[in-house]
Image 1 (tube, helix red, strand yellow):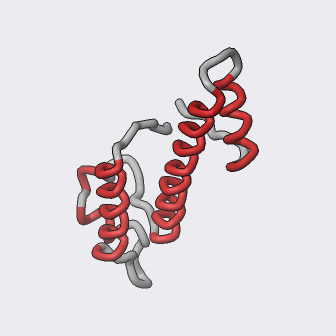
Image 2 (image 1 turned 90 degrees about the vertical axis):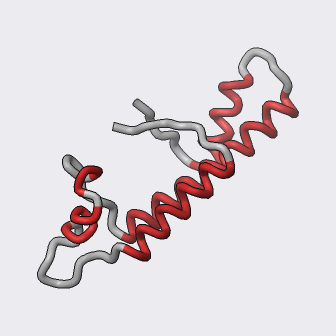
Length: 107
């Protein structure tokens, strides 16, 4: 399941800082343990049904979040310069796909 939420600049900065803090302060397990075991033990209530992200997955998530900032800026610029008329939303979606690749489906 995917979730979509709008964040202001402070919230976004806090989410990114929290991910990086988690990555730095809760290390992946050393050999002999599941890589997820140590991280799951820190906040078991958050990881009952899912495994915590590994460092590489956190890096990828932070990159996706940062790219979403760029996508939002492109949307706002296009809305400003193209005005509001028929087909603007479709043109924005087409440009977003052209710049960033295939769009992901959000449930």
